[in-house]
Length: 325
Image (cartoon, rainbow, N blue to C red; front, side, top):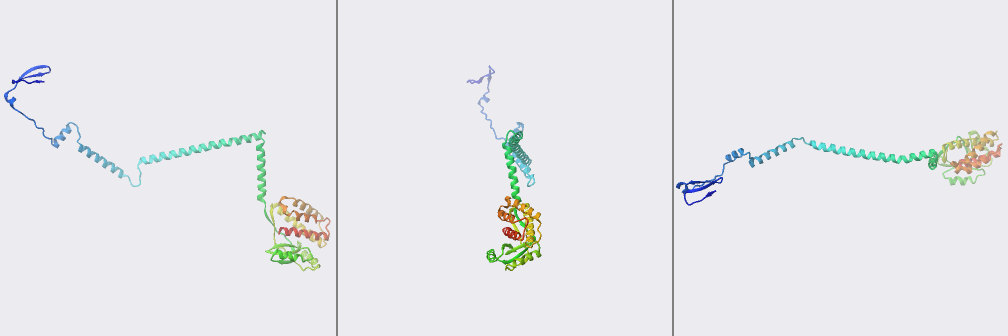
């Protein structure tokens, strides 16, 4: 604190103590000024180093150099190669997907086991006799399977006869053959063979027996001749086993009826067995479409079998063959 006075003496107060000081006239009258000039760059840098201050230009230059280094690092990676952090993200994503898949699979397994357990309980109760409904369901299922197996075996069975026919004419249409058959004095039937319709008046197991049967027909004024049977019969919706059985019975009927017409001795036991088998076969569900013709053939068999009985048997036998052709 300085107290101004008019004299050359001044009173100075330092730390609460007053002291007097005298000024010379020269000092009193002299006016001095101190000029502050701008510092040079060298002085600024020197003062900055002393005070650990970094100039802004150096800071900007450092940032530029650091950015250049980062750009060089990024550009140093080969083309197509991804940084390591990208691989880490891919591995983590794959692990998440695998975990989700395993979780869903385990949930499905648990639900499947929960659905199976009620069925197992029902089967256990059925075994103990507590619940009769599952047994009925099992039995019905087994019956359905059996019927399905039977239906699968049913098909159009082809019957091939080893025989010779007595032919009375061949026509291109069935209507023309039936019209001509009505004019003849002997019983005839129309069968199809080789895309033609043939009038047959008899059938025998051998060529000689077919010729002998033809002579007896010619005596009634009808021109015929013996020929090998070249057609095939189609039994529709019939099991293979029943088709084979029917083929055997037809072959036996052809042989025995032909012998009776020629006056030869007929095997009585074979006729009895034939009659029984035809009666059984005609009652089968598989052969409902052929029941009438098979029953007529079975009824025409007489034991013992005469010549007239043989002719009646031949007539019904031709009806069965015509039904199957």
